[in-house]
Length: 471
Figure (cartoon, rainbow, N blue to C red):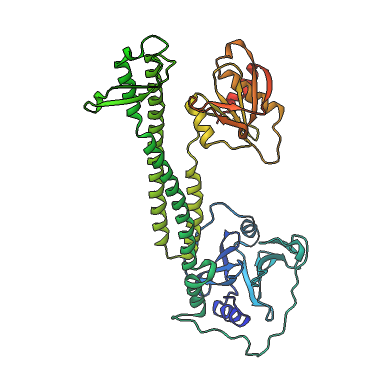
């Protein structure tokens, strides 16, 4: 619902802004501005919204949340017109452009509110209409600092084409219009904002529940880990079945299943291995499955906790009755939910200029970094022929890793490896997207492709500088 020029005139006549002092200015969002005024009718808050479809100017009777950080245009207005007085507030002809003449001390300004749905704006000018700045900088319209803004007035007519609409409820037209926008006003209505909150958070919950379902499927696969351990125990109890070191020559053995109360069980074995070696294979499979099961259950617990928190957040949002506050809460909740999806990064982190270097100190941290904290274009480094840390250089869009940063990362990789005592070493590096996991290998083990080689010497001065860059 856009205001027509007759409604704007009615709003201004009810407000009677002439003589009001501007006591507070808040740019509540990139397209929302509020002025706290004090005049002959007491305190009131003038709300200006320049968002397409809901642009308007009227008094609001609802609390308006502040933005988390100061915004450019609001700060400019504070520096120029805060504590100033409005000498005149009138619509220019029938063009839905409101001009406020403001005096602060010896200085005079003009603040224009253009209430066009497709090109709304708030523009601050000097007394000569030279633009100081605009809420939306529109160079194609000439609405930038230094240009001039002089809208010409269209003649007002007695035409019946536009009328002040009848709105439900008691109170002034300002009160009715404020109530109407709060309840039905498209992008800033409670209904649409609640729908947006539901859409955003239910979508996130659905994705989390799908991931949880996959984790539970894996859990079911890993739940047989204890049986692998039992196979190893049965084999160890029946070593004579294998004869000498070369085994019995059979791929299966039959033995009593004393773990399940008797009965005969068939267990697949490698005929080229001895009984103890076959048992060791099953024990190792058990260890890996058990370790994976513990990790899976931790991930399942975390996913369940995230789902519960998302549902609690949505329920809290749907209880809010102030649309402006609800909009702010939705933005904050979405940012927080996004932030919470990133686990605390393991390992060590170093900020070298604008480049982030991450060091995984052991196999578990290496694996966690690979799974959740690095992406395809990040650079991976590792010392050749020695066990040690994975080091990652986080990618920066459009930037190539400088040689000095590459050497920093290489020094870290060598320092946190078993080749450190040699003082020098060979490394290889490649983007993370060219790594593949070693099948049935230890946790975190990867095989690089398209790697490049790098020879490096440990440099004490570089390591000391890096220690000062640790975050």
